[in-house]
Length: 168
Image (cartoon, rainbow, N blue to C red; front, side):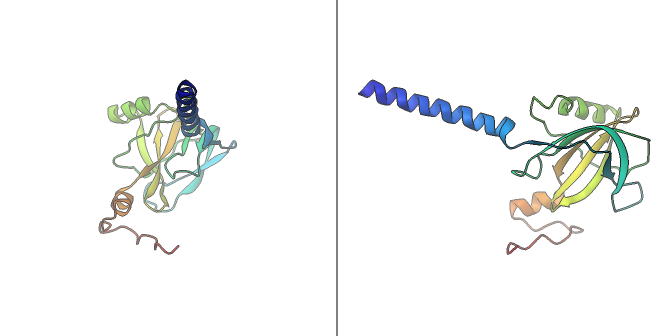
């Protein structure tokens, strides 16, 4: 009887671990449909506008506002609003087109430009894009300083929009 309980306990732990891994890596992500445009903020403007793209691949999840990742090619170059402090976030291994380390290295080396795709796409979260000279581009969601303060329970810095009320 003791061995049976030990085996049952170990099997339950293994199944729970495999289930948790699956949900984190695959379960919560949705593959986004093909898109022919994406919103980017042009230099000197505050409002994002649709820009023509091709070869779109994207994923997103309802479980977190920072799980969005996308790879695409701009149809034509443009001048977009720069983004300070861009830090590409890792994507699941099965989403091959998005390599956060390579994108980050290219941004640091000046081989790609970080731009604001959509500031405060949801409160405290910006959509950021890295654009390469050949038109390849990669986008992700990143917590901005307003979001960092708000999510930590601190007062938001000056210049931030008012946080959403907790009653919503």
